[in-house]
Image 1 (tube, rainbow, N blue to C red):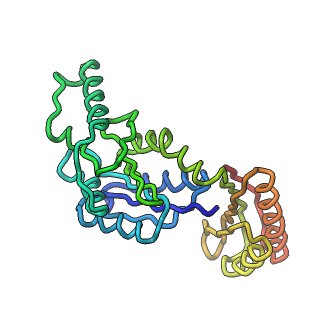
Image 2 (tube, rainbow, N blue to C red):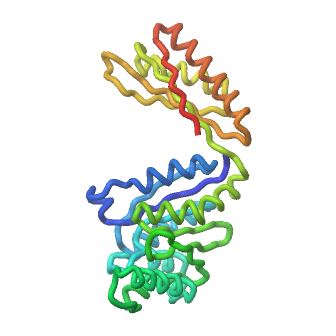
Image 3 (cartoon, rainbow, N blue to C red):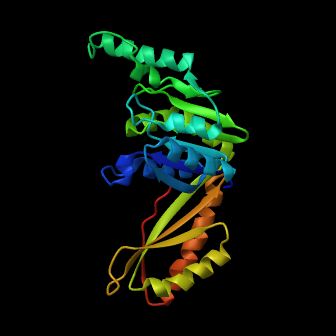
Length: 274
C-alpha cells in the first residue's frame, strides 16, 4: 500500500471540544479500507490563513491526495474555499456548474414546501464560489457541493463538514478515485486478545513476529489494568487478494499466539476482517 493522503478538518467547534471529530475517524477507516495510507490528520480553525497554511504545507509534502472537511456552507465562518484559493494563488469565482447545483437544490426544497420561494441570495451563491479550475461534486444530501481540484500530481478535495453530506459525496465521487489510485489494493485486519501478560512482556514478542512477517503490522491496545492485563492485539496488512492477506495474517497470529502462551498468557481469538 503506497498511496498516501492527508485529511484536514476545519472548524473552531473541533478545536474547542464542542464537536467530536467523527469525520476524521470515519474517513480514516474508510480510506484505509480502500488501500490508502492516511499519513496525517490536521485540525485548523475557521480562518483563511490557517486553512491556506495547512493546504500549502500538505502540498509541500507532495501528498498525492488531500481531503478537507468543513467550511463549505453559506455562513461567515465557512472559509475553506477562500483558504484553498489563497494556498493555490487562484481567484475565487462563481462556478456556473456549482451554481446550477445549488439552485436546483433550492428548487427541490421549494417543491417540497420547505421554503416559500427560490432566491439565490449572496450567502447561497457563496457556496458556488470555487477556486479557478475546480470541479464541483454533487451533494446528494445537502446543498453545498463538494469540490475537486487537480494540482500538479495531487488531488485536492473539499467536502462538507456535516457527516451525512461528507459521507455521501465521499462514497459517490471520492471512493472510486481512491480505489483507482490504490490500484485495487485492499486493507485487511484481524484482532486477538491476550490475558495474563503485561504489555511490556508482550512488546518483544510483537517485535519478533513483525520481523518474521514484514508485510504485517501489529499494534497492541491495552483494555484492562496493569494488575489484570487484557490486551487487544491488532494485525493488519494490505494485499491484492484475500487469500494472500489471510495467509499473512494467519501465519502472524499463530506465531504470536504460540509465543504468548509460552510466556504464560492466554489467547482469545476474535477476528475482524474488512
